[in-house]
Length: 256
Image (cartoon, rainbow, N blue to C red; front, side, top):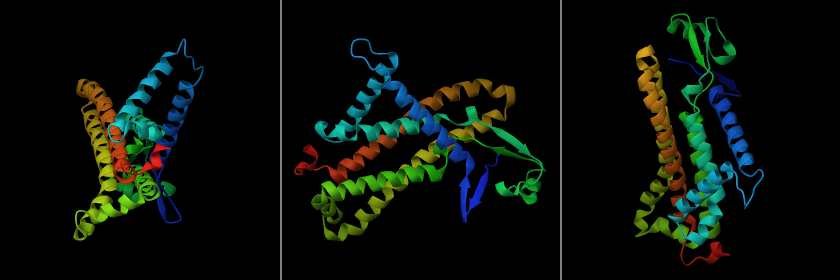
């Protein structure tokens, strides 16, 4: 089993493999965004432009399925950022893994002699993994969504947003509060569990050596599908939560 490099700073533990993966994922998303808007043309659009326009239309339609169509355009940028970042992060897993072997203590990474002894005198350090295979990352994404949802609910739909906590009767307030707190938890755990399970399966397949090559090829293809589905689910659930909290038929705040 691989170990991940952990650095402790001011009592807080930081997983370097997750941090490196987040930085790389962010750079890839930024590069894709810049390439998609370079040399824009109405008469002769590039393949990249056509592809990104298709994604934007897909995201817009997805958001529009959760709220009135004219209001959906306000959240296209948010939806695009979430779905592209998570999809790219989901794909950056074991196929690009960087592993080094440690046979001596490395105190600043938490590789002590006790750790080495428990791994037969040598430990394999994985410097790379899908950022979404780290619960801290998915929890961070879910926390951002939680803040956005309830900030918009209080700002644009305060009356109905506060009222829903006491519906259908005031006695249901504790249940509605638990439901609200459970939403970011399920968002984080669903994404984390699916991507982590995929990486564990790939690790198991790699242990088969040459016999695992056919299984690896099949799973790598399927992992792209899984990564896309998880990115889509996270995005559409985010929009559903925003619609429930911030959008109301009687509230004209979003129609301006």
